Image 1: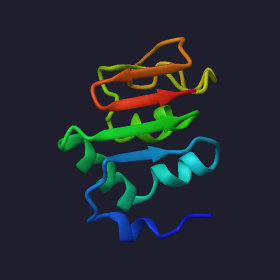
Image 2: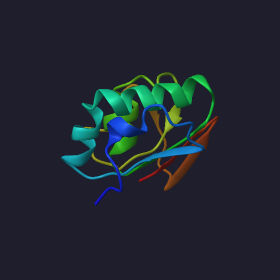
Image 3: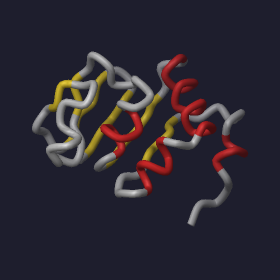
Image 4: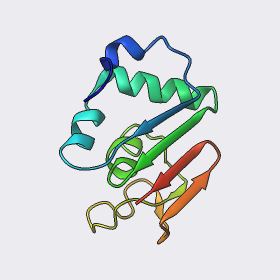
Length: 101
């Protein structure tokens, strides 16, 4: 259970924002406008973003955070190669994004 609602987190200056994996949770987070704003704000400041399991493909790719980059995620065929070059690694880090499948 979360300690607070996402909408109350938008104006906070985060050191790291981490997106959990799993479905349909990743899809629900992808569709949340407040989380999208938080993630894009992190990107604009080159601050850390973490994503696990399906989240790199489902959340980060959907908001073009991984566009033109390499990454990893849960190795389901429907996730591989969606707006990013898939790496067959358990952990992948580039710039300010850390991913784990």
